[in-house]
Structures are given as structure tokens and as C-alpha cells.
Length: 377
Image 1 (tube, helix red, strand yellow):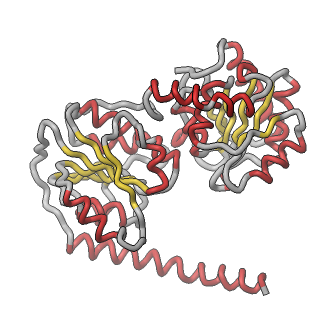
Image 2 (cartoon, rainbow, N blue to C red; image 1 turned 90 degrees about the vertical axis):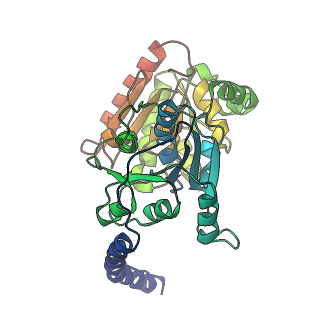
């Protein structure tokens, strides 16, 4: 019965998905006609009230938005910047030095639906609104909220017909261009814009406070001492983006054989995966369940982090940790990060155990040669 249901679901998906995409495209054209905005002079007050819209619930995407937020503060030093983000992502931006206020995005909830959200946004009377979402051709939520925000000037990507919902549009870069660069495109209409390309997770004094507050977690997660410990962040929200358990086991065993300690960190629903890797590498340590801030303290204390192309790796980069990130689907040019102690391992066309282990161990030895553990800014 379950097999029959699965086949029925796949059949319905094959039929329904094209219909859904067609419906969205029709909706695009209707919205572009009904809500069309004329171009207007780009006049911005000295201390503008700015709204930035980014609604997806992905830690990495919110962290890769922080360079754009920092750029806004440098371009408009007196600005008051509000970010509309998914309610679960407020923990990522709370305490960011370039964010003055957060508005939670909730799809449907009694008393907090789309109408009350639009009413709240319009009440703020924003001078500038940026649609900072990803740029797929069929998405409508970001441009629709931006258009209904009531902001005096609305800037967004050239989304085809939906570009008519903005006062100013910017060209979308090639798909392989970095996500940070895609967001910084939104500054094109501003001739004297200052661009920042470095991700950030909270202020430096806040990070030092987190180090102290979570010292007990770091000690439990890295019992051999963080100075000689490498962290393996084995999970990923999308399984297709991650290195398999047997590959992680090979990485962990190679690091142990080279004389280093290994700690395995895991997220919701990933404990079984962590146990599988640990069974194949008993010398590794499985970290206790962790919060975002506990991971930050661990990444900052340990020698380096090996991870998948996922939000955890972006977090490690944002707090200055040394990183080796494995890319199995997406190009490193889009989601990778360069700099001292950082390695983007492109496994899309050359994914062998020998290569993975060799590249990771070589990176680890380089990280050790760089000296003391901790953030590598």
C-alpha cells in the first residue's frame, strides 16, 4: 500500500508541478500590470529608514546577507535598518551590529498573517526597501511584500515582469557568481556606495562573551583540548549536499592517524549519522547537542572545522574559524569563501576517498602550521 501511495504521489507531482509553475507565471504578469510602479528620481534622506526583505529559513543565506547590511551602514551612516526575516532566523541576526530592528515573517498564524504584516510594515514609513531574496524567476512573495511596503523607493533584482514592482531594478549576476555579490548588486543605483564583502556574526565583544559563557560545552566537546582538535560538522539540511558517513569516517580516521583529535557535531535529526561515523572512528568524540552560540564558541576555540556546503560552515567562516568545506553539488564560486586557513574542496567531478582524505589532511597540517587555535581573521 505504501509503495502504491508513493507512486501516486510521484505521478501527481509530475502533473501538478508544471501546472503550479504555469499558474505562478500567469500571476506574475497579472501583478506586473496591476501593481506596476513608475521610475522615479533616486532621492534618499540623510538618515533613511531602510527595510531589507529576506524570508527563507536558512542560516547560511542570512549570514551571507550580513555584508550587504554592513554595506548599507557604511553607505548611509545615519540609517535605521530593519530586516524582515523568517521568525526562526531572528536568532541569526539578533545582535548584529548593522541591524537596528527585526520584523518576524510568519506565513500563517491567527493575528499574525500577511495582512497584519503589511499593515505593520506600512506603519513604519520606510524610505528605502530592498528585495534581498534569491532570484528565481517564479518567486512572488518577496517582490509582492516589497511593493506593498509603501516605501518611497523600492529596489530589487530584474525578475522579468515582476521587476515592474520596483522603482529601480538591478541586473541579476550569472548563477555561478557568489551569493554575497548577488546581494551587493542591490547597491548599483547608489553611485557612492561602500561595499563590504565579509560576513559577520555579532560584535567582537559579544563573541568573546560567548567564548566565556560556553567554555563548559567546549571542554565537553573537545576533551583532548581545543588546541589539537578538528571539528567535523557532518550534517546538512539537504542530504544531497553532504559527504556520506563512510567518507566522514575516512576523514576522521585520517586526522586521528595524523595525531589530531576529532569532534563530531550534529544537528536536529542527525544523531544517528553521528553515531554511524563514530562507530567507524571510535577515537573521535561525539559532541553533546548544541545551540548556535555553543557551536560558535567551539569553532572559535578549535583548530579548524571541516563541513558540508551548509549554514554551519558559513557560521564558522563568519566567526573567523579555519574551514575546509566540501562541495558536492553547488560550485564553490557561489557559496565558498576564500582567505587564510580556508579551503573550498570541489568534489563535483572528482570525488574519491583518496582525494578527499588527502586534501583534508593537507589543509589540517597547514592549519596547525599557522600557530595557535582560535579565530583566524
